[in-house]
Length: 446
Image (cartoon, rainbow, N blue to C red; front, side, top):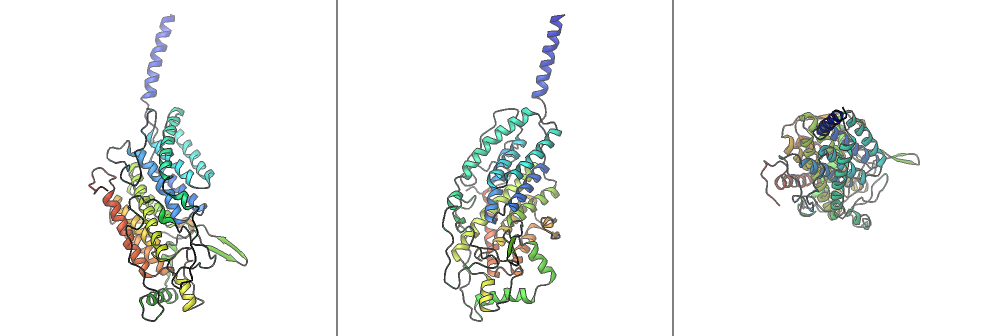
């Protein structure tokens, strides 16, 4: 009798151990990644990150996720060796690792490391884990997946630590100039210029911050008929005489200025808004959902978009502090009309080139490469900020509207917009031609 009991216990233990090892991994879907990326955007808005710094949060987080997911999908390539300074991530050694859980957790760890409000990221993690438990998550799978994700995080964190960001935190502020063509702080807060050393951040695909230097701005001259005078007067007249409701709506929709200050009596307070990069990461989410993209393809979209944004800001900021051009508001108030105000509040950095024109064009190219041209979508990114949705027939159409919005907003000259589009197109083309995401794509290797 005793031997019979032992026999059944052995057989039961054998089948139990087999069922544990053969147990399917807990499902992790694209919706999980969308919720995480939305949380990252929400926290960057809450923490009032500048547009360049927010782009850094997105790109390292997105790459952390993508690199893990690419391990289990033979149709996708690692970015190691394709983008500057990135070496292959470590491989998992535990068979219990769920690479999809590890990918999102690596993204979570990097996001949490790069923002301030860590507790808000922790809220997302607890909610996500509860959802996974409802799908059958076991402690062994969770623990193994997290252990592996932590090793990936340390790898990506070490790489990020070499991008010169820490060093730029202690560099000098942007010096003010007494030359009439140079940038000056603008009302109402008269903030110092942000991130004057962003061109010293390591690029991702660009060989340097100045790989694509635009044509210089027009020479400063307020003589009637000069190119500079003409573009100043265009901004002045567009805002004063040519703004219909549609143009005002376009300007507001693409404002994306996290530094908007409100003045009531002697009190000044900020209005929290999404950054330009956050807006385009929101479009990546919308497009992924409309396409029905799975987790891998969605990660591809977020990652390619974030690289375009990151390099776009580095290249644009390189030009901003080289040309150091005065904003329309300052010139118009001083030389033309002291009572004139722009439609949008002027952001705190030099004018040339237009950042939104650069990064929107680069991001639109990235998304077109993933989801195709003539991709119809309704952009609801700004709804939570009190603005109605807008519809577009392609990503490039949206980027063109984002660019011209800066003229309607009264914060950029047309040349900054045109040359910004040129910069963004060059960056988008380079990313398309030099990075292989899908293995069946033929690209020119760096």
